[in-house]
Structure formats: C-alpha cells, structure tokens
Amino acid sequence: MMRLCVPGLRLFLWSALLHSVAPRGARDRPRQCDPPQSQGDMNSFLWTVRRPPPLPPAYLFGTIHVPYTRVWDFIPDASKRAFRGSPNVFFELDLTDPLTISKLTSCQLLPHGGSLQSLLPRDLYRRLKRHLDYVKHMMPSWMTADQRGRGLYADYLFNAIAGNWERKRPVWVMLMVNSLTEWDVRSRGTPVLDLYLAQEAERMGKRTGAVERVEEQCHPLNGLNFSQAIFCLRPTFKTLPFIRAGLIQGTILTKTLVSQAGCDLISLFHIRLCGPLPSRDADVHQVSAEFLRDFTPA
Image (cartoon, rainbow, N blue to C red; front, side, top):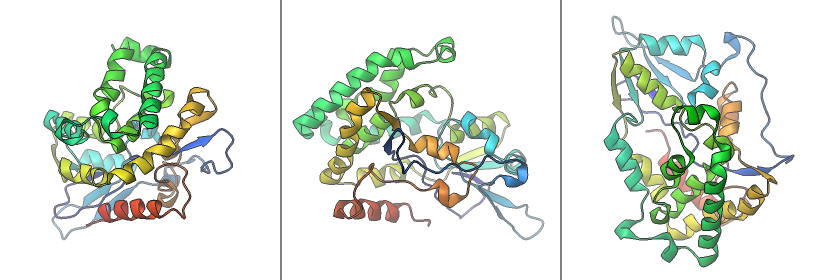
C-alpha cells in the first residue's frame, strides 16, 4: 500500500501473506479475467482525496507484494502520473531502511531462543526438514541465467529465504515454505512493487516515509496461538510430497494476484486462509475473524 501525501488517513490492503495450493486441472482454479485492451479498461487502484484550493489533491494507491515487472503493465498511466507528480510518498513500511528489515526478520523468531524441533510434532518437523533438503537440492536448476548473471547463487538465495528456519515461529515457516517454489524462486532479485516505488521515489528526490511500524505488521501473525499456527501448517505440509512429485503446481495465490491485477478489487481479494480447508471448521472461523479484526481499516 502506498500513500501519496495524505496526512491522517490510513488504508490497509492485505496482499500475499497467505498462499493456497491447487492440483493441476482443479475445478476451482481462479477464473482469469480478460487482459485490458486499453488504458480505460485498467483498474487504477488509485483513490483521489480532493482538498480545498490551493492545496493539491492527495492519493491512495493499492499495491500487491509481487515482483513489479509482473504487474507494471497493468498500472495505468494516470496512476503513474500521480506518483511522478507527488513530492511526498509514504508506504506501509520503509523497505529501504536496513533497521526495518532487521526488525521484520527478528519478529519472525521464536521467543527466548526457542527452536522448532522442540516445538513441532515430530512428524511435521521431519516433513519440513525433508522438504527443505529437497528445495536446497533443486534450487540451482530453478534459477535463471539472468539471476546467475547478476551474482545470485543458489546457496545464497536459499539462505536468504530459509536461513535460521529452525528458530522461526510456525506461521512464518508456513509462509516461508510457500515462497520456496520454482515460480517464486525464479522471481527473486526483482524488487516487489512497493520496494520498486520506494527506490524510484528516492531516485526522484521525493520525501518518503512509513505509516506503520514493524510491530503492527507482525502482530496479526504472531498473535496466533500455537494450536492455530499448527492448524495452518498441517494442510501446507500435506501437499509437500505432491509438490515434489510434480503433481501440484505449488502456491497459486501470487500467480492469482498477478493475473487478476487488471480485474476488479473483489476478484483480486478472493484469498483462502491456510490452504483448502473445510469452512465448517471452528478454527477457520476463529483465524479468519482475527485477521479481519487486525486488518480492518482505521
């Protein structure tokens, strides 16, 4: 989410925090919208806040956390002009600040030096370790020639994504596993849309800032209790053998967000929590309710 000089106003757009999986040929595969044929067919994801003259308008722009190259062509010229013409640009977090990145990394860790091996049921821990060994083995073949040409190597990339995994909280491990797919790995090294816009804003000499603290980003996930976190982990882990066998595409939410970037907002946010789970389960409703509470616009 990017805010263009709008003091006192907050709007949250929840992007690809949670992923789901679907087998090839699944009947419930997300419906693809027709690609936009013109600028007028594109959704701008841009809201204008008009202020009394002589004050200029302010803008709210909705972003998704995917490599910018995958969605840039879906962003209409009007939104790009608003960005170029705004002297002040504020983001959810300052992703160009090393301290912010350090805090985001720290908030994913178990408290008091805890480890997953002592926390997870033995069967889940063994599945996780087996899958990470598989990913580490496969990663060199997943990487592109362009990535290698830019100095990205498989061992470095694996450690950047999965380093210190034994000390992460279970819910962050779930997100980590969902990002360790061939499709996601091949996109590494390209900044996500928020970071790209922040880098462009700095290059253009704009004043930049953040409207949230790291703690506000981490709390919704870290607020899950252990049973809820394990509940989310189990469906993810059940799919791992099928992913390794090539019977499941892997995570599809990021692809869905990209393919729906030119569609309406309702289509964009058809997100399933914790994988394909029965809606009658009480834990689904509890987890969903807590996320909705934490992501309600303020």
